[in-house]
Image (cartoon, helix red, strand yellow):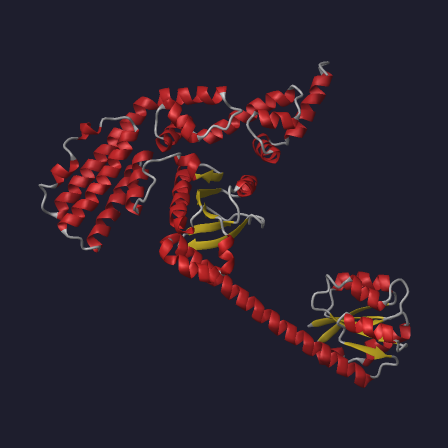
Length: 501
């Protein structure tokens, strides 16, 4: 039901209009009256009425000034003004403010009926237009989301349709980053630097971040600050070409998968997980699954990945030569993972294609594949067991000496002489947490010492490697349970009590 209010400084007029109008007949509820401009303004803001009947001359604020005051917040409210004075200036001001009508007192039932019908007709037209506009915008957004999902999956071949859905403004886009989420997260704030289009693909929750300028500094700042509100979310690489969207999408999903395995939380970027991973190119989903299982030592996962691969090859009805190429490709991918550990791949026997070439049935080929890949898993596991302690000790010493610097996974992995992804998994297995979590804890412990010594929070933030003061404060509070400022103040009191102030 629509809401209406009556504003007039004469009690008899307020009562007369309240009683002479059959409000229910118009589908309207009278929700209040006021006798002066200031009370009227307060009531308007409290009730947000659809129809306002107001006198022009009132103490405190006249009716036209009231309309001018609430113009920005009135929305679709209809104003009907009346006065005992037929003054040209008032009439022109009222028309300029877009009122439904300007009535002279005394107001008759017939005239009120006419303007009420006019007001309601306008409201109905506005509602119909708003409904149509909302449906059109929802439809347009739905089309954009579908086109964006196709862009993330198909890349260049879907780019033309995506541009049509986005509109000519696509030319302002400087690049794209894809995010993948493990759970519901708070929405990122709008920015002049980027636009976010959220899509789903089965169980995958994705967001395409369309950058209007690069580098994407503001995006990373916002993501780091919002990270505490999400269980885990991952970012693929940022690419200037929209045709590279599938690559960023795959990277985001891969980073999310590794992040789950490492029990990470908040934001994790593909660069942090893989560095410059030689295997992170154009992999099939079966190759990605085999790589992940070999690196994480997941025997069941490896078996399931090989089962899926065998089913896929069977469904494609490949001829023997094609099947052999697919199997060899998977084996060579596995050998690359083994090379990451520093092991000699010749220890696994003959060159793969020589062994495979003497087999005739698909069953023989897949039995051979399973044996070869399981042998790789054993070799990778043994290599990790024998090498992990020395590599991790070396990495810990490196982080302790450089905790105030920006230490990337790639830098750390190169220092210990290992592949970045392999090292990150090795570190997690040895320490129970990821390298980035360990580094963060290390920084917070050093920060606590500096704060207890009375150093200013801004100085501490920089000394432990945080150029963004707010990010440091949020991280400190999350791990320590209070802000750096409160921590410093608490220990300042202790120093005074101990006579060290």
